[in-house]
Image (cartoon, rainbow, N blue to C red; front, side, top):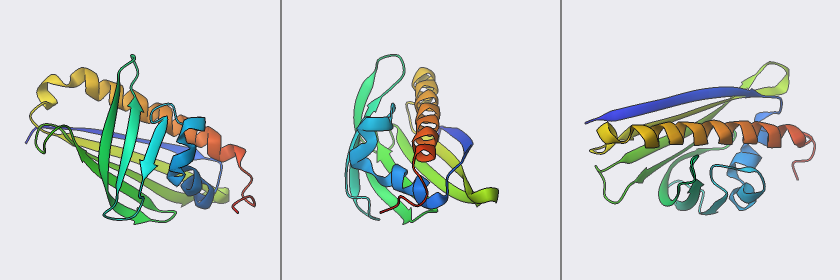
Length: 151
């Protein structure tokens, strides 16, 4: 099957607990997340979330995602389909890795598969830009929160 893969990472000057709190606080996405300004749903394995995407270039869309992995402070993974499985399927993963000095490396990757991949180059580029913008905004937001303010 045709596919495209995106992968990026950034180091955040905050511990994994803080980064996890920001990443999984769906109701707060509107205050910091330029890529998914609105999100709601059940962040439990097998649950579904709805993400309202604001793609670079002015496009927008709504996607329903199935939660595949929730490992607190370590990994969050979801999958989604455009229209029907096989048209364009996405597998998105966030991995938090504790690094020196109480910091976190956020690794984010997405694999896209399906019939539309050969003609979806512009959309794939927009998804990459959106993921990069989200990672930068997540970094900025997490670095604003004092580590002792996890209540």
